[in-house]
Image 1 (cartoon, rainbow, N blue to C red):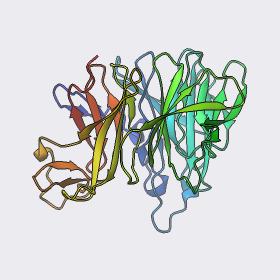
Image 2: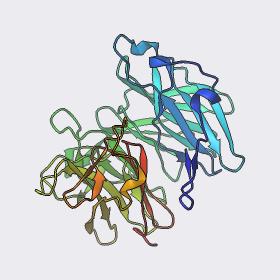
Image 3: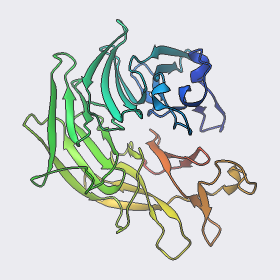
Length: 352
């Protein structure tokens, strides 16, 4: 979708089935675009599709594979690179190194619970496996030299040099101990971003409020990771979903939710928080509240409209899951909410 924040108008710019001439339903359908929108230097927006959840009686092996695509706003055209050659795998992340003509894909299969890190060369229309035990929602980062990074299934950093083909897998160490993500810690899905100069990365996990910083220039046998602090002071289990972004003011912004234990209403509360690299200060900017609650019809029993709830004073606030945060260059914040799939616009959060 394309949304004009000035007018509120929106339109479809990629219809996956139409673009790829697909006539399929059920588990064979391209059910969703689950990738973050990656904007290349050219302005092209790279995305890819993946499978949905199998209904009763459906076999996840029947999913043929995801499609890689881009949309070019300059020409208002969409382009497909075709289906990936990994049967039953959808694509959950895509990053473009346009200088080298490379797309990095993170795939996942519900059939065998395998996640792959793959290189696609545009000119030769060829795929190469980089790493086969990726985190199930792995996300590629590119540093200033063009080296690519991802996180493995056992929570190590895997790096790939596209010029030499060298692959390195190194643990993350915090205060002398390995940063794990196993059945005991249950930190959940990692989300990370690279700083504008390509030298550092910020990392947060879905089920832990702690923010970490990683110097990508390290060349030792492990990555020494800096623990910056908890983005929210709470003894509850938090939830942050692809909601980590840097503002034009150089500060780091995170949305995360927690169970509402305030005694004022119930369910969950979603907080917008901020970390200042210059001072080390962490601020809770408050709970997301919708000032135009009539943006959707919540009175009728409509499907998939159950993602908001009303506090005792009448404030409408998100209930279940946010699905992303992006800080605009003008300092505004945009948060997506899943039910109904909607965009919240928060003005003037991060003035440069």
